[in-house]
Structures are given as structure tokens and as C-alpha cells.
Length: 307
Image (tube, rainbow, N blue to C red; front, top):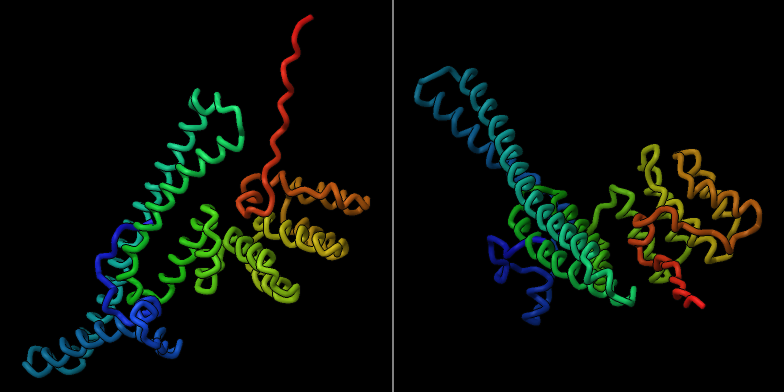
């Protein structure tokens, strides 16, 4: 989603560059990496504050007490300015990426509404055309996202947030190899990313216990009305293991957290021992974006010839 980065990383010792050069890469301890990023702004602000305090006190402009006070004020001002400046740059870049996505979605809508699209006899061919256009604007957005990389050292969570954004776009583009590469470095704060992670655990045949632990850990973060697809997905996975009891209990938990007709309908289906009729189609794109099922297209009847 992002264009070329403002800073070249070809000379930085990253895992990719080391593999390219045939070198062995040793990552510094996680704690050290986090502390370096957190402390960078703090250190710069503190040095400026100390410099101001010393300058005021040693030159006799003010007493030590006032010098320290003004030094602390400068420290806090630097912190506030850094936060404001970083937030402004991040928002500007996010707006640019959203603009690319919105423009791409507009082009897709125009294609779908065009007479040429309606004349396509095959739904599969229409899907291919839409997928080709979607691949183009997703690729532009992913390229644009590289512009965030120089900002990683100023924000602890920014890299994980951008990785999550990239993961979701690659998921929509069905680039699952890249999705699986990014997933370990993502932050799962919204129902869509949680559902995508759980879906990949299922597709990659992760142990049922691992799937359960992930679901239970993240479902607690959802607010009222959120996560119909996540609950539905976990129930769907349980049914794939012929575990109707777990599927029903999962949907009943969801029913207490939201008002959703698809959830309610599937509860009745399972209570009536009609598990084969279980369907999450009512969730629409929220379900189909996971790629576990294809939307069903009603068959068109051939026009009858008049006698």
C-alpha cells in the first residue's frame, strides 16, 4: 500500500538482507528492541531538557530551581510535539492508502455496473476480471505502505499495525504465503484480523487445542455486537470435526453478545439436528472474505421457447 520507502534499508542488517548476502543474522533480544524504540524520543527530549536547565543555571539567567522547572517543561513539550508530529505523518500516509483503496473500489463498482460486465456469460470469468483489478490496487496500496518503515523506530506498535494491515490486504488478494509470513508479527485487535488468523490455523491444520486457545484469548476482547464471523467461524470449524455440542455452545455464547439473525437461525438448525443446513452465508462479505466457502450463485434458467 505504499510507495518506495524514504530510507533505503539495503545496508541494514535485517533477516532478508542477511539471507540475501548469505550471512547469519542474530536478532537482539525482544526487550532490547522495544526499549530502544521507546527510549529514543525520551532520550532526545531529556537531553534537550537537561541542556536547557544547565544553560539557564550556569549562565546565571535563573536559579537552579527555575532552570530545572523550565527543563522539565521543555522535556514535556518535546514529547507532545513528537507525538503530534508522528501522528500527523501517520494519518497523512494512512489517508493516502485509503484513497488508493477507495479509488480501486470505485473502479470495481464501475466495472460491475458496466454493460460489458453484464454481457459476460460466465460468472467465473467475471470473478477473474474483478480479481485482476483488485490485485492491481491492492498491490499499489501494499507498495505505498513501505513509506511507514522509516517511522518504525519512533513507535513501538506501528510495525505490527502496518503488518496487520498488509496481512489483511494479502488475505483479500489470496496471497496466503505472504499472509502466513506476516501473521506472527500482527496485532489482533479487530474481529476481521482475529477471524483471518483463526481461519489460517484451521487451513494449516493447527491442533484443535491451539485453535481453541486463540479463540478464547481473543473473543474476550470483543465488545457487544462484535465478532459474528469469529463466533460463526469457530462453530463452523467445530462442525467440521463433527463436534455439534461445541458448535452449539459457541453460537449460544454469541447470541448473548449480539443480535444477529444468522447466529439465531443456526442455533435453531443445530437444536433440530440439521447440521447439514448450517450456513454463514447471511454474514455476507464478513464470512466470504475468509475464503473458506465460495458464494453460491443461483442458477439461471434458460428461457423457454414459445410454442
